[in-house]
Image (tube, rainbow, N blue to C red; front, side, top):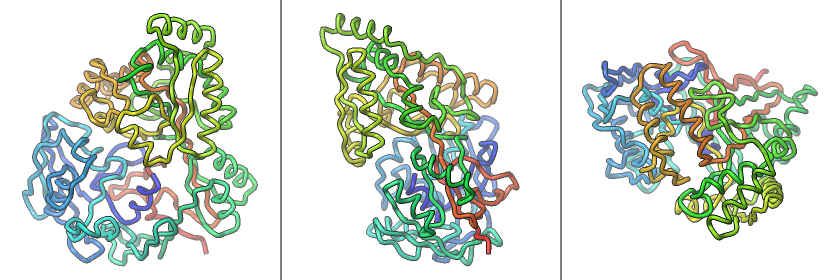
Amino acid sequence: MSGIQVARSMYETLTAPNSEGEYVPLLAESVTPNETYDEWTIVLREGVKFHDGSDLTAEVVKNNIDAGRGLYPARRPLLGPLVTNNWDEVTVSGPLTLVVTTKTPWPAFPAHLYASGRVGIMAQAQLDDEEHCADHMIGTGPFMLEDWVPNDHLTVVKNPDYWREGLPYLDRIEFRPILEATQRVNALQSGEIQATHTMNNLQVAQLQDLAAQGDIGIYQTDEFADTVYTLLNTSQPPFDNILARRALATATDSETLNEVREMSIPKRATGPFPPGSIGYLDDTGLPEFDLAEAKRLVEQYEAESGEPLELTLLSTPEPANIESGQMVAEMAAAAGIEVRLQQIEEAQLINQVLGGDYNAVFWRGHSGGDPDLQYSWWRADSPVNFGRFADVEIDRLLDEGRVESDPALREEIYADLNRRFAEELYNLWGFWSMWTIGTSTDVHGVLGPDLPDGSAPFPGLADGHPVTGLWIEQ
């Protein structure tokens, strides 16, 4: 998320979510479907320029879209082609107009023009710069890159030609990576930094205490949150067997885990859809902690498989993850499940999950937004279905949700999807992140100004927040 937060200062997307979770035009002036939702006309705003002075045009946007799909010669993306397979053709029909046809009716298409802030439009010069594309950042956003020293700081300065009149308010922002949570709080208290963004619940508790004393400002929310959970590899033993999944689920006392490890700050997750999201359910039918039932399931699993119920649980080496892993292992042991803990660095962990070389891993994802954004992550035939489950019912619901335009019917479809996850236990849901921003008391405007169409800004923080409207009281 930190990378998206930084990128959002320099890049903008064609659409953006508002306070109701609707996707409204940003760089686009309009995004309009035909009657069957399988052809979309995108009209861009006139007069928008990139940081290098070049114009935002339909041709540049088409090239950006093609690059993300793996169809532009200068770019060779790995993930993009896997999650854009419902796009069909993208054509330029005028200097500021594109027409996109899709393989199916796709009412959620505007959400994919935002994609959690990951598809900011870059200038043609950056797009074609194969050698320096990653560090020569040229967007349309409120700030421009000044300098970047990796692992130390990245500084952006005000874009004097920004298309939204009167914005941004700040002249400069310096982003600093501070890995240790307590150091971030200390830096905020001392005035070394003026804002910090976190979902680490130890740091959240410290920020809450400081805010209660009036020492800092705070904004926090679990609206449109992402979900922290245990991702299970269902393609191999033991979790290709639902007995094993159900045994670990009923052996885990989630209430105590949340109270002890997370200080009861976040809400326990009932599924991947947080409150306020399409498909949210207060009760999805998840099994409750039941040690006696867990022991019975372990015995049944071992009798039927002829193998002990054991697994390796991966996590990054952060102390909080290690301590949570130890607590999970102790709970599992009480039911007769052996949990071996293994900590590896994040990059290696992600590669191991991609390769399917794991049993279970602490994971976080599925930030609140239109549920269709999860389509590629859960379809049986998708290479980025990390849990490797193949469920015809989930595939059916994903397909129905994708093409349905009636909001009430979409709500029902995704509620059924939520229940299916609870029934099959492909993931063991933990909690919804309580993202928190602590600021010095003179910093304001965290969520930014209203969007260009006049709607209120998006309240969620899981994908960062705009810095356009930040200002400092003099």
